[in-house]
Image: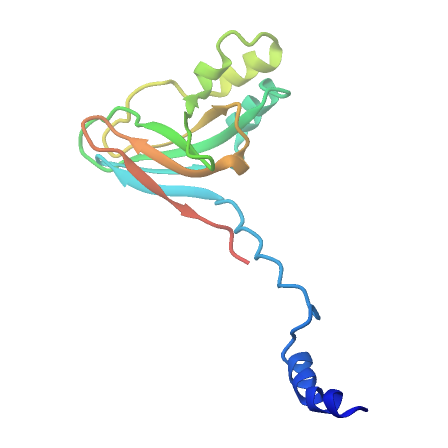
Length: 173
């Protein structure tokens, strides 16, 4: 080895040991967290949870009637925590791009949908009415045009109260 190269050898060894010179690529970014499984919270005397993948008989019937149409059928569980009747709160999805989209009652989503599957779904739905004092009720709700994976938040708007963001609950494991 010539004298100038011998003088550079320690610097080259140190640089190689430190990872300089393109030896390794940067670590890939962490994958995004899984979408929330459901949202829960309370406002205006009403507790609510919205399960984006919930399954019960009415929800299965609504999904069958709306098969082939883009959107999400979720289960909204509502609890009137007061001793007075309460209107059913409005639920609004917050999408990953910041837009908001309303959940509508399954009954409203089925308006104008023909066929026996839609008739069975309508028959399986609870009536649209206010929540009685201390009543708990599960109802299917529909988010038209948006998949569950696009939902990053749910806002509940109860009559006479400021909107409340429901807390996301992510799957464990």
